[in-house]
Length: 435
Image 1 (tube, rainbow, N blue to C red):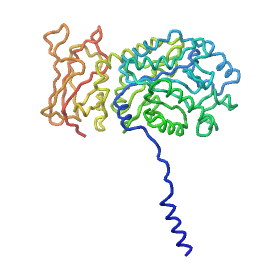
Image 2 (image 1 turned 180 degrees about the horizontal axis):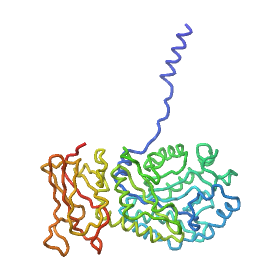
Image 3 (image 1 turned 60 degrees about the vertical axis):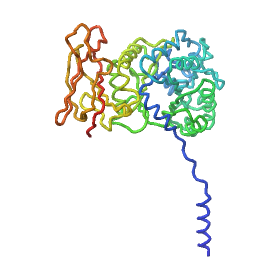
Image 4 (image 1 turned 30 degrees about the vertical axis):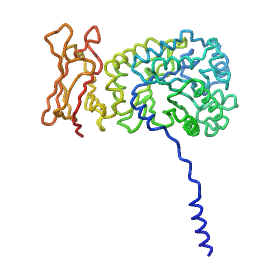
């Protein structure tokens, strides 16, 4: 009789027990839209850009004297009088980027917006203007989506609590510091309610789940990148990854402006990294570290404009594409595909001294032509080579027994010296993919 009662009790509990709360996720439509974008601009900028140091992290392990100078003296000299948000937005637009993610608050806790939660913010500097509000307005003006970088970790808040500043000690994360969690929520309420629609949020901390779930519940139309998807930092995965993901990477060795001892990637290297990331199904979040006066350093602007020229010609192969059925590359050739256009894009990289009007042939082992196949070079009409009227630069292909041969003339004049160092993109339609 006792056994029977016990079994009945278990049955009743199993029927009426409240199930565990399901974890909220990004809306699938927002993720698909994100995967279509391809390229974003990351901005790391805080008041310690005046020092040319690593952003925020110099506070960890620093003496109390350093911390006091950092928090009380540095804001007094932060005066980015050359900051022109429209100029930034125009430059980012020309790169072909679709979205911009701005460091509203990095780990140091300094807020780049007019916050009521702390005096450690941009309004208490000689500049005294709401940089976040100005930038977000300009980004939208030029059709760029707005992303918020926000650090749930906050060194200034920990310091006020009397804690040792660190990222991996008890109390440094929102999961074991309830007061910090509520503080972060108040700040995010300001950002998400006072600055128009925020398209995406990037949460940079070791523990962030409670904050992510809170955002999903209260602001379900904001896409969460770091915190909900893979965001490799300074590296590209070895192969294609399913679903949305995003590689974030610096132009040089540092996220924030580094005036000396910096080693920048070339424009070609940046373009090739974008190609590789898109061939593997990810987005590229390319970082910019503005100078303390608000200007984009010329070394960074140069690379952004080289990327911009290439994207102006070739963005069709970068946006609204997915990996080519698991086939990422073949030698120096990378692939993406647009299923809506029934098109495959072949990125021809690492071609030295490809002079305008000269023809080169390439072998494709993973594609097969059909009677409906067409071929073209993105950005050129395949009809004329400037000053060389007898040269007909028509793109051609021959289907051999086991390989597809394409014959390409680089006819588009983009540089005065007529030599183009960056990838040429070929569009093939109605081809079969051979795995």
